[in-house]
Amino acid sequence: MYWKFILKRILNAFFMYAILIFVVSALFNVVAEQTIYATIEENVAAEVQAAMSTDPHLNVSEYRQMRYDFYYSAYHLDKSVVERILWRTKNALTFNFGRSIFMKSTKGSREVFDIVAETIPKSLILFTTAVFVQVTIGVLLGLKKAQKAGSTMDKTTSTITMVIFGMPSWWLGMVFIMFFAYELGIAPSGGMISKPVPEGFAYALDFLKHLMLPLFTLVCIGFWGMAFITRNIVLGTLHEDYIMAARARGIKESSVVYRHTLRSAAPPIVTMSILSILSSIGGNLLFEGIFSWPGMGNLYWSAIAQNDVPVLIGNLSLTIGLYLIGLVILDLIYGLLDPRIKVSG
Image (cartoon, rainbow, N blue to C red; front, side, top):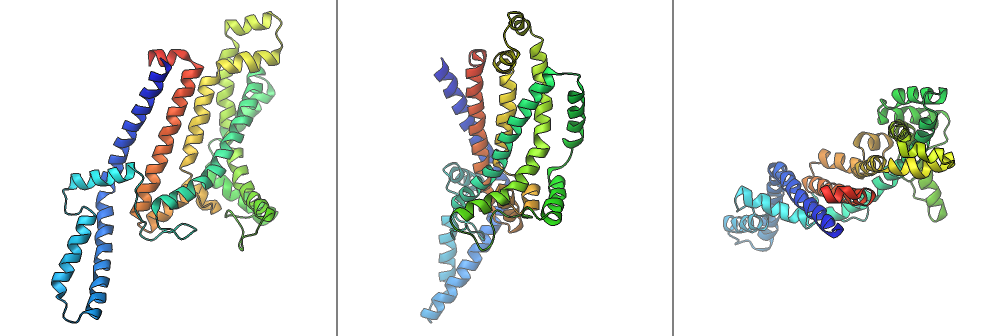
């Protein structure tokens, strides 16, 4: 039953998510609590000063201890290590990441969920769009290479693939910035929007102008590998007996390639495409740094630089969650493309 297959995949994903969040909470436990202790010290010192100014006869030591007990209880610091990790895990699983220590969203919110949720679309706009373009160009080029295997076009594009596919995206980004932004001056060198921020239709145009160069860089370096892998997958399928039989029946070559061959080769190509999209969720720390793109990679780096542990945990938790959701979707698509998968597991 297909619904059992779906339910099994969803339960497995949730179980895996809970384990990963527990591991993340355990790894960050010491650093997170060091930050909490420092915050408590600052809060208590400020509260004692404020209380002394209003009550000259205040018992300072008793009041300070009372405030310490309050904060220790609020942050579960009076519990065992395992209980504290489980408490932090429960909060992460319910998306209750708390407030950041230093960082804020563009609207001034210090809620970690608001900060991360505001950043995810910025990474998706750039990297997911790039993946869609890469897949489209790569699959079309790969089909042509498979049809003309061994030709000059196939050999030339394969050589280019070997050269470009090994280039770091951030290095090629720097080269393109030097050429297109500083030499030709046809694209901004970085950022997502100009300052001051334009309004109306000018905002959309300015955003597209900033998106153009990083998107072009990612597409230039990404579709070659997809084309090469698609070529090898399709080339093996083209030699199958049912493809030769389709050609013998006089079916058009375009129909043989796009309807018969591509459909049979779809599962591994879909896998590569979806995994590429999933990897784009977390952004790219170096690439976003080069182009000053305010995505998940930049957020992660800023949180590390400022030792903002709640933002780090929120960033990782949401990224892991979205990635696992994508893997479940991939499993379901595979179950539709190949019925043997949901039967054999």
